[in-house]
Amino acid sequence: MRPPLDSPESPEKAASIAGPPCLDSSTDHTTAARDQVYRDFRDALGSFATGVTVLTALAADGGPIGVTISSFNSVSLQPPLILWSLACDSPRLAAFRNARYYAVNVLAADQEWVSDSFANREDNHFNNVRVRKGLADVPLIEGCVAWFECSNEARYPGGDHLIFLGRVQRFARGEVAEPLVFHAGRYRQLRPESG
Ligand SMILES: Cc1cc2nc3c(=O)[nH]c(=O)nc-3n(C[C@H](O)[C@H](O)[C@H](O)COP(=O)(O)O)c2cc1C
Image 1 (cartoon, protein in one colour):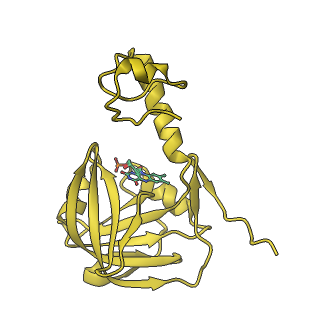
Image 2 (cartoon, protein in one colour; image 1 turned 45 degrees about the vertical axis):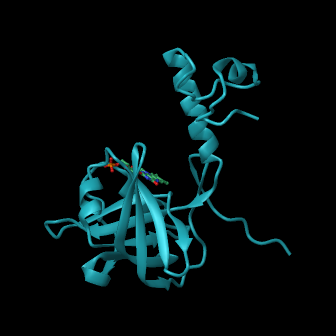
Image 3 (cartoon, helix red, strand yellow; image 1 turned 180 degrees about the vertical axis):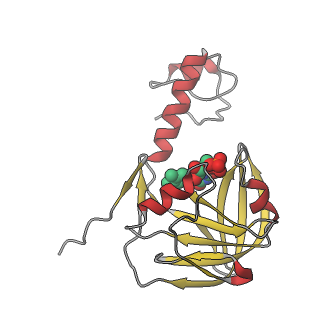
């Protein structure tokens, strides 16, 4: 078992525990060793399988924006709250921070290409993507497993990401049942149920 990343333990004690060094800032790692620990940390986080969503909104100029997000999760039923986080260095951060409404589009198994499209840095995200207008004209991507249309309730600093808390105003489920799954840096499909 590795020590916690923000371990209050002494570096000596941490070093005595088997495994790579911890990310404790009091531990004196070489740059290469630290890079390796962060890669291990990323890989360990990637062992948590998630669905894939695209967050959509309208920018201040009225143009549609979208970004692929796997950090989406449920928070509360009453009131209905969800969360997700976006990298602070994302050029789309300001637009999402300022948007009054945004939508969570939960991608279906056959929408890997949609995920790839909204994960790139080009400006052509909506090319070939069929959308309809949702609450406050926020684009909703056709063919998804589910949609959550949210007001931008609150934002919290989270290290190098900004955490968004959304209040769900409307939701719907699509006709497609199979979601797209992301695990260990790769897209996956759910295995058919046995029996
Ligand atoms: C499957 C998948 C999930 C992702 N999840 C997140 C996420 O939760 N938060 C985030 O900030 N970026 C996430 N990204 C990266 C963004 O989609 C995007 O690639 C990144 O922000 C770079 O584009 P930008 O800097 O122009 O926003 C994910 C990418 C992929 C392919």
